[in-house]
Image (tube, rainbow, N blue to C red; front, side):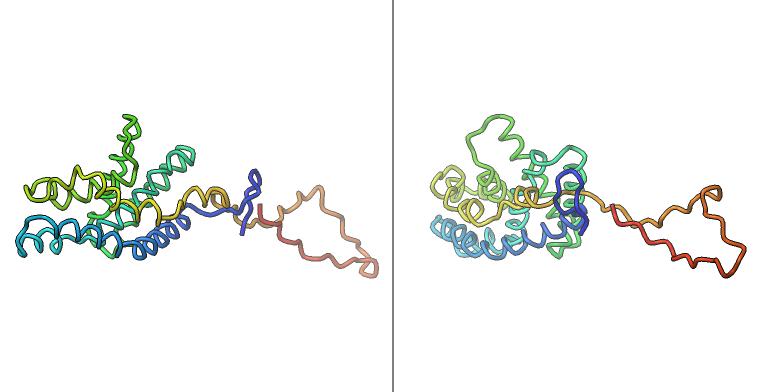
Length: 226
């Protein structure tokens, strides 16, 4: 692997970094989703809803996709603070391009939700809100499910203990991926191998006209990678 001459860290191309990021986030989401879903379901089942109403709230929504979008957004929201503007822009663009495929979706549902959640986290930071980033994820998913519009469930939106418990898998189970990446690697594109430049004719050694005195020349070596 190529080494960054300035930091001394291994160089990783942005696309490769994003591919690994999405893969690791999918793994983390799959591991923590069951406990998150259990907390979500228990809270809704305690509400005064009929069986069909509970089913309509829970089963009609792709909760695993919502949760995956929240996991990706939670970590992707840190990119702007960790990387220079040009690198951050490239990473975020690559996430937007590939996150739907990472969730096996053909539409833009996941990427749209990811960047809506990021905007909510950014707004909370800008306005010095006391709400933690994971709470913005929880609130956005609850709103997407319509919890705030159903009379029997809207109290869950303001139930601090419920939302805190719902946010625990996000706060404790998702790795701080980009901060760890930056501590170990540098973003960049390794320079390609180049052939040794041919010497100008004026600098080439003059070949002996006497075959007996001729010296066999070795083929030029390839220059080392930058």
